[in-house]
Image (cartoon, rainbow, N blue to C red):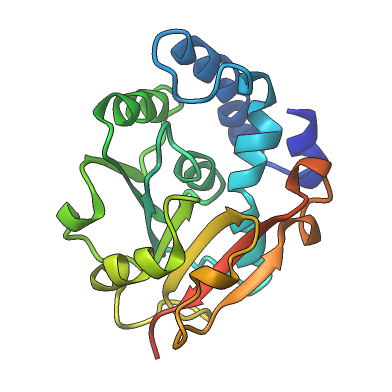
Length: 211
């Protein structure tokens, strides 16, 4: 929790309690179902929770997300970035989807355990998801040039706040070869938000998909 408090020192008590509960629930579940590498579970807050909240920090720079903003978390696994984002933004709505049913069950159980009421869950892939949202969020699910055509149908045509609706994803390494020629892409070093060694060469990618 210390690294979370380093960057978010003024969290209200109920959020502190929810984030603290993750440090108990994820290791317990990980003993049964491997949703986080067992070698990495001790880095839960730095490598997973804080990493997820890069999206929150990016949005806050633009006065976002406004109340009622909707998100689809594609390939959520055990609930990242969706669950930390849902804790941080209780007045927004999050739909978490993953192709692996047992991982979705873990995410759903954890959300219920900490009292999240702004999340829904789906076992399936994005082709089966009929919902539309302001933003699709993800952590390194697939190449950008493959991902963007798949999610276009899920992006609401009318933006809700200052930022245009679109994709916000977290990726590592060189992404130049993944960017379609006609795409307008903003890529930001995560160390611009959280200056930690683990985030070297990791990026936040924002692709607006509405006019």
